[in-house]
Length: 114
Image (spheres, rainbow, N blue to C red):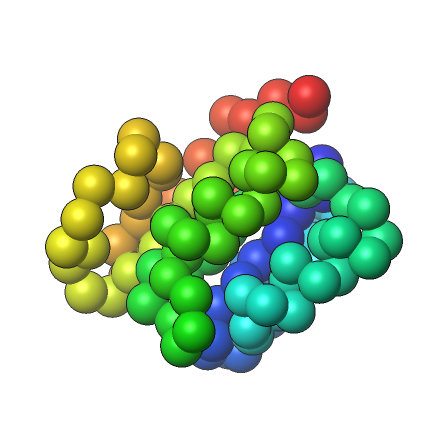
């Protein structure tokens, strides 16, 4: 599956990119939400899965999901945060940081490609 990972902490995005590409997924990792959206639109990529941090400069993970959904309505989104999320994230999947990487892999494996 085509997976976009967006986290302003490069260690997290690199770790997840390594783990998910190692099990056969096509992974695109970004530190900035705007870069992910630009890449998605310029290359006309419709990700199956978006894994994003919630608290990022410029745009939070829910806002990123909303803009991704406009381009790729089939997207499944996983939101991660080290702090409590102070708003309803609209039924998106949520994982608290720090997390066991296996928990994200297990969740990713439950999604079916569109």
